[in-house]
Length: 290
Length: 290
Image 1 (cartoon, helix red, strand yellow):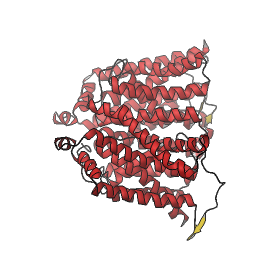
Image 2: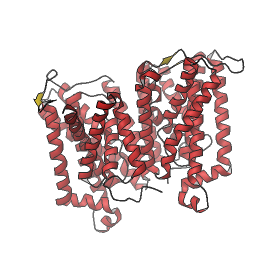
Image 3: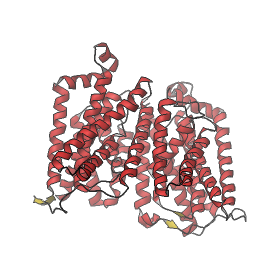
Image 4: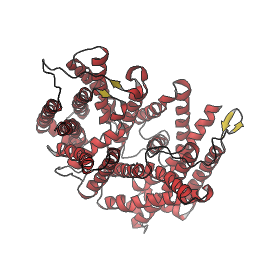
């Protein structure tokens, strides 16, 4: 039961990061590794707001989400938009994003140091006993928020005008320009929204298990796994894939020991890439396969 | 003076790594972030064979080469179906699995404790002791690697690699078995990386998993891109620049740990800057699809 609860919790923040990542991936068409830096950045924004400005968590958290979202937009405006203007390939996008990730991580570690920082005010909470599993209140909030936020993003994409714009750019950027969509602004919007999701995840994880400057790398790679397995254009696919990863990671703890979590999840990725590169539920894509 | 020769040894290790990675990334166009995995495997094999079995230095190196060439198949065979950014993601997965293995397979690798007491090498009766002698050894390895890479890339083999980079389907249509070429080039590059690993292990006499992480892979890739992918001198140049920057910072008076962070910051920033302004690198020709 504890394993199941842990898997679901793990899955819920992977899903948050992955949904944001997929949003950016669909519009801008490259693997945005620096999404992980937004995740970390938001956690450290949260830390600075609560420690240096002494704001309560309830005020600092939304502010940190906004700041994290701005950080994502800044990356888009300073790096990825100019690259797109030069018609850079998606590979160059990935490499540049990797560079941005390194810059943000090393900046954070220069400013804050490499040691673990905490935003938890109370001591270690014992947690509620729920159907045989110990769950803290932060973890319940994480689960509920991620489900609510991800489903509202899905609804937003389907029903509103903003969602339609994003889907148009994702589908065919040339055609959307012909129809008068401002692609750059729409992509910026996708970056803002996607980065907000990553920030939210970063803050929730920081509230649960503290933060280090390198905390963002694993979530972003797991999000990539989730998006590749689930297919970028399917919210349900991403959610199921996140659950699969969560179960695999915590199943690995049970069967192999906690140190093999990463090896298990990335072996899963390699196998999926080899056997079914378009993902379990995804549609075929031109970019994949020879 | 000893310090200067130490820097020369480090530069030559990275020069071998960068020029072998350039064979894959620059010439064949397969961007890989798993080079530190091959480097680490080579170093660990060399260390294990010489420490546990008290075998000869060259035997350890040979064992490293064998294992690494076998491991390179894990990365090169997926390139049958994956290309560009999807391939890069697969190499991410491989690197992380291997880091996990080196760090947590405690019975063999001794985990975070690392392996100490690696003997200095004896080559036909000559035992390098001072840094000067190691610098000579390192530079001769660079020379060998440079000649190997140069011969390969100017041969018809190299021409096929560049054909794969520019248009793989076209190369196939000319009857080239492109998978065979990719597997071969990966094997050769991994072999060179493994030799660099052996040199590192025997020079430092102590290794642990932190020297062979994803960050290290990204550093080597940055060297290739900043120096100039697909060119003769670019990777060597990139290696020298990126090793000298932090040493120079330390020399000017920055404390060691800060210099290490600034190095990360500078190579991340340089990577982004070069991709935006001069994607073919300082002295290179190939700009990743532009």
